[in-house]
Every structure is written in structure tokens, then in C-alpha cells.
Image (tube, rainbow, N blue to C red; front, side, top):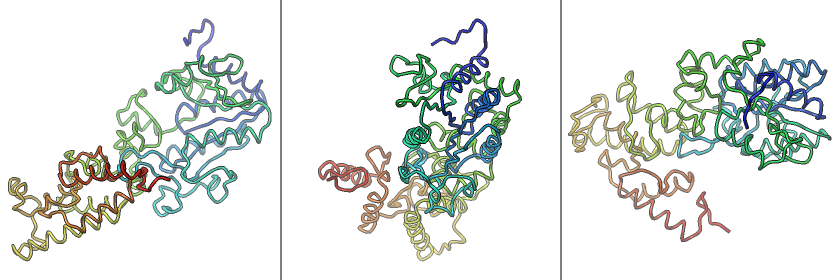
Length: 439
């Protein structure tokens, strides 16, 4: 699908596509994310709509844990004069959380977690309290919602309906496949930059053949609005080809959570307590639940402060697990105070490493390392497996299906036997992923 034009550039081509859409379709809406591509797309549509005296609608799905600059950009886009209705959706949708094994998905705008929300609900948003869509269900996936919305929108607007999507073929393989394999999809009048979703309902991609240089070239040439977070990304060392603006906990974005912290520290502080595992699993420990990857204490923290930090981090998403570890640590310190005369105030930050490894010395480093490893039985603190611990572990794996599974990396023989037994029970009894018996 080459993009070779003899007499026009990609900007002129995009204007032609938008003009055709406004000419041939009865109703048009655009899906925006707050990123550079969809933002430029809708502003190009504004220029064409002004020329043709047309209006259009906009769909924006707010994932709550967004950059403040993105929300500011969205609010500026709302002022475009030819927008008919701006659907600012802030509903409790399930989102991928790739930074935690205990919570593989999280729900944005979850009323049960209102006190942890990154920011208040936007005043003009569609929320659970004013939701007009009976088909929406709490915890619905983003991909499900956009399809259902498209069909609903078509029902409300009889005739031909087009949805503008600001993806570029060179952005990712998925984007390329969405557009390039036109022999596998139905199109509007054979135009490869369109995809038929249903009878009378189409997606179209007006900037599909653009490169990132074209996007920023259009911003400069036409004096378009832009999301200022990209400027901060550039100043922080990311080139224009590396900059991405997605919900920050997906498989690709988890590697950039440090960037999120650097760009908007005020927002980052709220994100820490909102999404399971953001700080503990990705920023400091670089580990997964019950894993064995070495992690590092921040230089500014003492080992005692770091131990408290790890406990608090665990408690943000699993209070019972935090209390389990706290109880073990309290007994550990109590033993040394009773038998060795070492009070809590006198516990050193570090002891001889060999003695720590041989479990012959008390130190805050030894305790912190046990927490980093998610040493459930706290064997590194000289505890052994108990019946009470076994009962707790059974409860945890039934409550959090991903707490332990066959892919868990652990050198603990008891935990490995526990995992193998659980996997065998699942196969024998026909348990589903949540530990419930299948019908």
C-alpha cells in the first residue's frame, strides 16, 4: 500500500479524505485519546468542517490515571467550535495492569476506590451516575466498549455513519495490519483507508500514511494545539519516534513508568496508591510477586525506612498480606530482643553479609530482602512453614487467582510443591481461573 503522490503531500491527501467523508456520510464522529495523532486528526477535521459548514462529534474515553497535561489538552480540544457533542466517558472499565501479578487488571473510576482516585470526576463526563447506555457493564473492556458505542451511535444517527480513528500504519504492526490488508476487509467504495464495521457504519483513517514528522510538521505549519506532555518527554530525553501516550500500565508502557514519574511527579504520587504494584513491583524492586530478581534500595533511604516503605507498598493493594509479613517481622525482632538483648532501636541497618545469609545476624537489610523476595513463609528470617501459613496461602490464592501459578519463579521447595499441588487440583476438579468449580 504505497503512499506515492505525484501532485500532493500527505496533508493535502488527508484534507481530501476528510472532505469526502463529510460529503458522503450523514453523521461523523472522531475517537480521540489525547495523543498527538488523534489530536491532529480532529483539528484537521475542524478545518474541513468549518469550510463545509458541518458539525461532528467526538468520543474520548478517560482512563482516570492520565497525565494532567493530557486532560488539559482534551479540555482545549472541547472548545473547537464545530463539535456537536463531546462524549467524555469516565466509566469503570477494566484496564490491563502489567506491573502486578496480584491485580492483572484494574478498574478505572471504580466507586469502591473513590478515595484513591487520581483526580475527581470531570463535571461534564458520562459516569455511572448519568450513564445513558443500558448495555454498559462495570469492568467492561475498552475494546468491547468502542464497538458497542459505534453501534449505539449508528442507531441514534440513521444513514451513513463514519468514525475517524487517528492511527498511522508505521506506528506499530497492529496499526499496519488494521489498514494494509484490505483484501481481508470490506471498504467504503474501495478506499483502503476505510473499514466497514456494519451496514452503514465505517471506520476511516485520514492520516494512515503519515509519519511522525508529518504530524509535528502539521502542528507547526497550521499552528495546531498540542499536548504539552510531548515537550516534556523530549526534554527528558525521548525522541519523537519514542514518544507514546497510552494508559501507563500495559505491557509496553510498564517499561516507561519511570518516565511518568519524571514528567509529572504530582500525578505520580497519586498513581502510586491507585494501581497495584506501580511503585513496589516496577520502580524500586523490579520484581514480581514471589520472584527472585535482585532489587535495589533507594540511596536516600535507610534499610529500616526501606523496610517500612515495602510494607506500606504491599499494604496499598493487599492489606492482609502486609499484616502477614508484619506479624512475622514483629516475632523476629521480638526473639532477638528476648534472647540477644537487641531492642528494635538497636537493630543495625546492615550486618556481615555472610552472617545474614547464614541467618545468624539481625539487620534491617535482612528483613527488607525477605520482603523484596516476597518470602511468604519468611524462611529468610528463620521461620518454617506452619499450618496457619498454609491456610493463609490457600485463602490468598483463592482470592487472587494470579497470586501463585505455574509460571511463578521461586526457589522455595515448599512453595513449588504447593503450586504443583494446586495446578493438579485444578486439572482434577475442573476449577476455572478464579478457583471456582465450573458447571
